[in-house]
Length: 102
Image 1 (cartoon, rainbow, N blue to C red):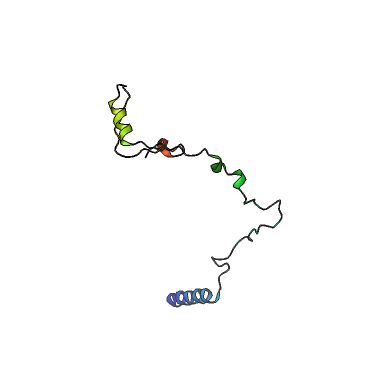
Image 2: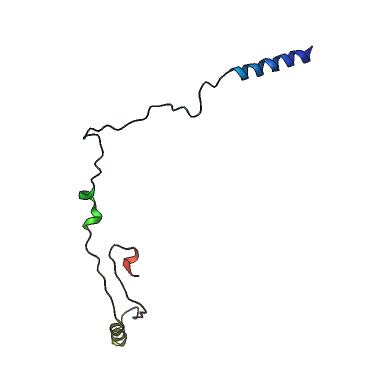
């Protein structure tokens, strides 16, 4: 008899699970989406060119050294630290990381 009560209870629970629908779907959105309006006071101004400070930078200074200039600097009597040792052209960029030496 105890087995039949357990079976009946199990059957009833399975029937309730089968017939009940989900109260809330996981994909249901809780809140309404906020849609921006077209009022000029509430719309973000995307014309940022006038406020873009990257356009106000000074021009990039570039120094190109030739081999003759480097040899002359190496032969000079001035004691600069570090000594001039150059294998390629030097370009200086004020806005680059590390002073712009490449």
